[in-house]
Length: 112
Length: 114
Image (cartoon, rainbow over all chains, first blue to last red):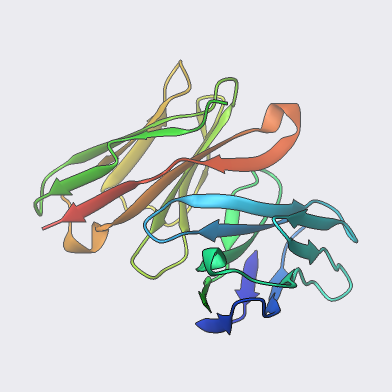
């Protein structure tokens, strides 16, 4: 079956620090990969995605590259802000219906 | 742009009561997914529909049922509610027939069972 393993949190950083959240996956078939963000008390928002090997998804300064050889999709941001404080979920979807399988989530807190 | 609409946003029910959650997908989206997110947990897939037919089923209790109607909106019916059913319930939609696998999420319904 499909599964996602992501770095456990919580992660606490200072503003302008570098953020990395590791994510690895196992999948039957060729997955699409996603990072979702959930701000306190809110729903899930798609942060970025990649649908094939070596694709790089990017949005709001965040980046992640689909690495088929290492089955990874690590999230990075070069300089975090207080407003980036949230829970980040790595996820994948595959045929036939592309339902999402989520990792456990990583809570990130950025301090001014 | 239109988004996925879920109602109600918040719901408080007593044990053994019944709850109905509604989801209105983005127009022309043919696929609906339901997820349950317990406190501090990752979302867990419950059930999905494609073109009004159930397409997949996850860890959905027998007390729960769902359907997708002719206008593509979906309802999740939950009976004999238990305290452990307290969670955030998300609906998501996508347009698989157009080859778009990205799922768009609603804001969720927060169900509290007391």
